[in-house]
Amino acid sequence: MVHFYLSDLLKRCHYNLDKTLLIRHSLKNERFIYAYRDGFLREYTQNQSPHFFDNYDHVIVFSADEGTTSKYLTSYEVRHGEKPNISSNCSPYLLEPYKGQIMHPLFDIPNDPLRTYENKLYIEWGKAAVRWYQKSTNDKIITQLVNTSQFVFPGYENVLLTFQKLKEIIDNSQAYADWHIALSAINAIYAITDRSNGKIYIGSSYNKSGLLGRWSDYATTIHGGNEAFKQLLAQNTTANLQFQYTILKVLPKDITALEAIEIENNYKRKLQTIPFGYNCN
Image (cartoon, rainbow, N blue to C red; front, side, top):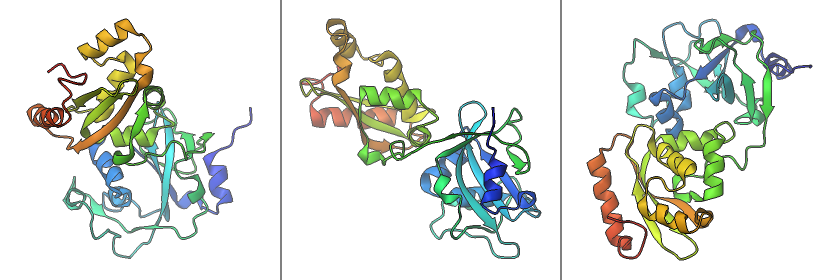
């Protein structure tokens, strides 16, 4: 089998392999999750130990994916001798001292030929996944190039999913990486509406894996532990095909259970989901 390597693509895009660094950010790092969610990927990436970028002119940024697969996010130019490039509204947590690191001068690349591959290109990082930064001269097989228009997260206020779509998103973390990052970055008050009769169930998430963790329960069990759903499914095994999932209110990732449940109960009262919906209490 003939493989196409990342280095082949970089050469065609006129990148100097000896002066290009590859970085793979981990989805287990909450600072990265928050930075990506808030639009400060550059600030997060350029916050490194002194002299980290001294030998490089370009940085290719990936996010970890399933196993050792990695998704291409974007590229930056290292402008040695210039001041760090920091957005005026950068989140304070990225500006605080962190493990002796400093901000380096990374900048967007004008007319970057790699831009068309952002969030579409996947590579095999290799078995040494703990080596989160590597030289671009290392061979990295390009494993996939996808059309991501249908996979881009639309924003929390625009989430409106059928059960089939929810399960597809949960089961395909590679294609729906943006969804997994966004849903795991928050907790939330959510609604499940039965389109066959208009009945609503109000729920909340308040755990470390965020809304993604809670909705993964529904994708796996369908009922998610809710007694009314269990009874409904016992009568009609395909009732979930009429379910619609949406986000009513975004909650902080560190919200306590008591705080989340108080907000959840307020929505139950507003929408009367105990007497007329699927909430049992």
